[in-house]
Length: 316
Image (cartoon, rainbow, N blue to C red; front, top):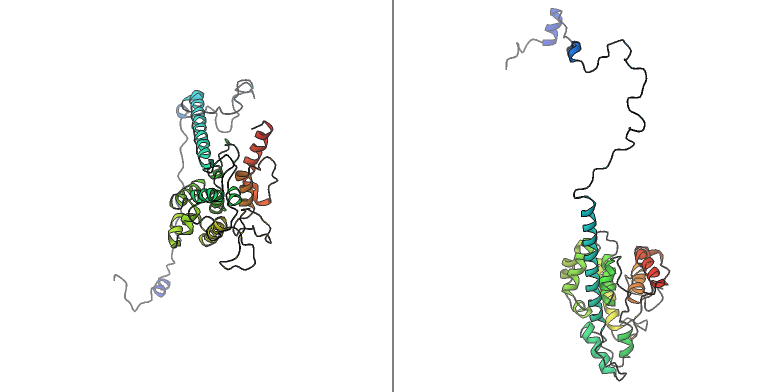
């Protein structure tokens, strides 16, 4: 291995020779030569005062106060064009939303006052599927339908996600359940859109038996079990009405009128619909934004409420 005799102690051998291990040397200090005057950047000599008499080299008026910002590429005209294009796109989207709402709010029952219970029942099925009102032959079908219809506020430039579902009460409340505690607009929009593409009506969702398919559509939102329980409770109440009796059996009588309340003792308290969903329901489905006093959980929709109050003063 290139070692000395293994029987010899190397430490003892060094001691016997009187040689001590030397300390490692540090790096040598290199003496930098002084450059000739012809290569110096300043004529100032070591140990001598600078050759000026304390005069300012730049007048105060000429000294820049702040570095000027670099103009954006394209200049102000391009910025104006971009703003105009965005405004045009927003106006186009608002017009489209108005048209969709008008189509959704049209009733198919006779408008001459001669509509009977069968007309209102057919309207319920047309809007919300075959399970709407099922299981109760003695319903007040007009109350059942009218209490579930939405009266949305005018389309605003605020661009809240709830505005896209305000014409349909069930969809509005579902969107609130799904978007709660989610910050990403893109994630909310994508998952909610996918959910309604698969389940366009409450009946379509109520008939789903494989909740794994539901999870596939909304898993990005998190809290799947909680959201699923809320969706099931909301959909059951919307289709069949709140239970009027303490008995939770299938034959318990149901209320025909649909409401959303926060009092836990109320039969109209829906599991999973808290202050955010309750206030959104009142603002976007009952057009109460001009008069509502938002609850503690309703602060996220404050910008829309502020706009609605100002619009109401202008007669909008």
